Length: 334
Image (cartoon, rainbow, N blue to C red):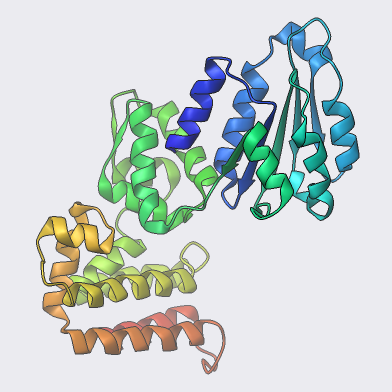
């Protein structure tokens, strides 16, 4: 995120580079940077003759180079944005010759999503010298809640840790989807607000009481009644609560509990750093570790692996997703 801020700040100061090669698994920042260039480099009057958007599936590398070599008309720069540039991956190295001596009055933006170019090859090396190479990496799940807090902080909003976790568990690591939901909330809630689980439930439709976060907490604390109430809700709403996601999150939780057992320093700060979690959630792990000894946790991890296999139709006979989850919960909390 700091690299993105630096790129945007340079653009704001009109410190332009002739090539911006935006690549990587996470499309969110690729879109954000290219959109900023699209909207802010040229005036509306200049855009008519000097800004164009190409699509990788419709052009060749030669077409891109040909457009990039044009001179601007009645403007200092022209902007050429190539969206879905990954569709040019077979011949993308042909861009290297242009990148060695790029047109200084052209700002060429390559949006190379879900892939990256080989750092050992000529194209990477010459673009790194003449322009900007930005790799947009996918965030790990344990990094997304912090990303949500930082994004909201920049807009003068805050978020309750549980509310952030609800978004992560419901939407995964897709920053674009998460940002869309945050934008909806910002339209509804006044600046300076703290986004709560209740706001998430009311405006996005994620239940604050019946979700994987609450299930994990109930199992960890040994609250059998609450855990069974949640899985009953899951069984009645299987499309909104896929079994494979629930098992994956429970597996991740108990793998972390196993790691917790092995820590010599179990202070909140040390646990948060070791498990890469918010200090807000360290209590959940200490409670689970007290409830489930290390040997028991190892057994539970095995149970979760078996349930994962069953969720994919292996050895599950005619068991529904709800039945598999109920059977799993009985074995875990027995």
